Length: 174
Image (cartoon, rainbow, N blue to C red; front, side, top):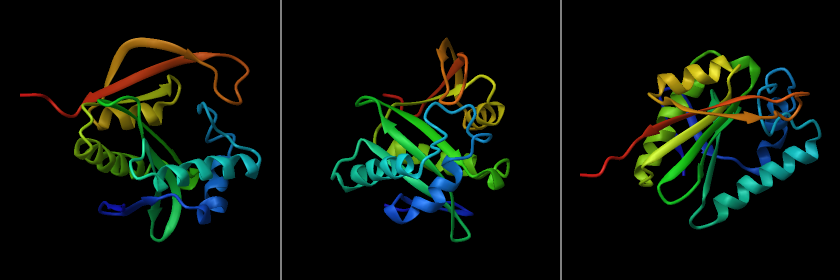
């Protein structure tokens, strides 16, 4: 399954993406607010990539992890992760050289369209409250900050931080 936007190709991640994925996955500064990144060892990145490929090989995947490709270069990834039959979670990571250029927002709008086609009723996204760029993306998508605030400990953090939950209803009955 490939998806296209004005500037981007969203295609399933493959094992051939290992080097480019590791290039952004290992960046400690760009990933300081991430729960599961950075992945400092390439073996960690490979395991993550193998899981993504396995999900695509499943005839009815629960997780849809796409490479974000701009001008034939793999610059990041975006995923839709099934939480239950009605709800999915949206997540992304982008190489630092391509941040703040609207790529994630553009890709995420296309993923929300996919979520609607799959018949999800609601999509959620989480972020560290200090991650202002991700918060802006969620707001541009029309996602609303939930009153629930959680606690998280990011992968390389020494202390816990506040986790925000955003959500959007994409399918309304009746």
